[in-house]
Image (cartoon, rainbow, N blue to C red; front, side):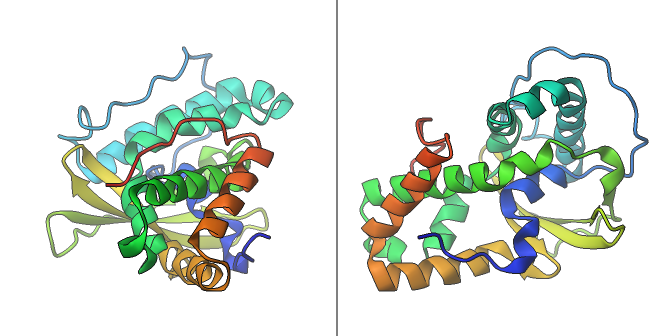
Length: 239
């Protein structure tokens, strides 16, 4: 049984990361992009090791929007293809291990390496399938990057943005990044001031208390497998 998701997660961590800015760019004019070659992931640790957080996000977002424009008919015909697109562009810049560790909370300390790895993979894959398809109809005119304000510490950054809903209302979405040996990576998303890490940690923690960690892992893996993303290799194996 899935953990009920708060209503604010209509824009969830995976789709928010894709739609926004890791994935947020300044307001861009909607434009018809020519067909582009197959996506090749920006090597984390290569370009982003020397880029500022906002420069990295601009680059990745621009590539994502161009690929969506070029591949939209094929993605609508076969939505499962969007997962590969998200993986190639998002995953190198999303700190899956760190986010998974925080969501797991106190249970991380007593979990085995195998449990940590399976939990991290299951959580990511489950979220990806549940919400990743939301990017198919996304376009540049839905995003607005707000002026950047540096954090107090040099190893963290917060990119503020607004996402326009279908009814015209704008939702504040913040992306929290940290500097890693491989470059800047997003590890948290705050939607209308609510942290996805904090909410998932609360929900997962309750589920672990009620059913145990192994049962939660099995549920996540089952969800991912039923949704067609369960056979991919783990994005990272937490140490």
